Length: 380
Image (cartoon, rainbow, N blue to C red):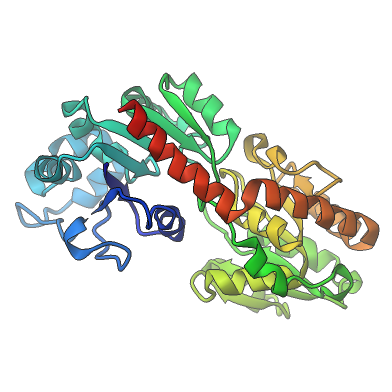
């Protein structure tokens, strides 16, 4: 089949399409955010550098786009070339069998007009993060989401929660299954980086502090426990600037890595040295860093928006669930409870090793991805 992918250039997308590198499908990519070419595709199978103005930039455009997005989107085609127009041209050029969009707001909203124009082309949508869980709460977004889901033929999710939400919002197509967004992990290759529990001396913190991330609440909880944690090194990774600033201003002796300071390999190696991993947010899908902690044997303490983390964490058995991301005291209690119960940590590591092999293995999930498209080909 000819498969046209519509996505931002993210590591999760790269890892997804890597699964198809040895298949016979013709793979194409529409650079919907206009970020530039990828090494992953043949140059003639990429549609990049498409964003062009029809009129010079008009004063007030940005304000209008933020304050009155519906009005702005209705007049935007007069100002510049749009995603819809480019996609229509691509479809006419390559005649794809399948269009697969990853993420809702940036990669699926902008193409709905054209997708409705070509109803016979099968559309797969991969739900990411807060696509549905958070944005369904706003009437503008809810209407947009419903319009997309009404047209989408196949839905891929990284958790069961989002499939249920999609059905509530009108999706009546086929759910192709729950597969991690990054598909899976080469578990055997990572074994050499996994230290035994007694040798792990790192507490690892996801450093997101933004619309959803609440890393500073974790840092405040750790600071309350500093006299009890002096044998551990606290490392914050993926930190937003506000987190780096907070740790510096409060003279906290933590090692802090910015948003793009570490490669995925380096993060996995850090997980293998960590006794616990803590991620805290108010909205997300199945957090990839949570899955990585499970793979690498770090005891996960993870927030649980919409009960999504509870799909893989049994509280007090193979991890802890943060039920209130804003409650610093309750986070501190979970941290100290986990550090002081070494038997629980060892047992959790054994349980999570089993979960990793059964649900998160790269080869297993690669076959699921290949089968997904194969089944579409049979049904096409």
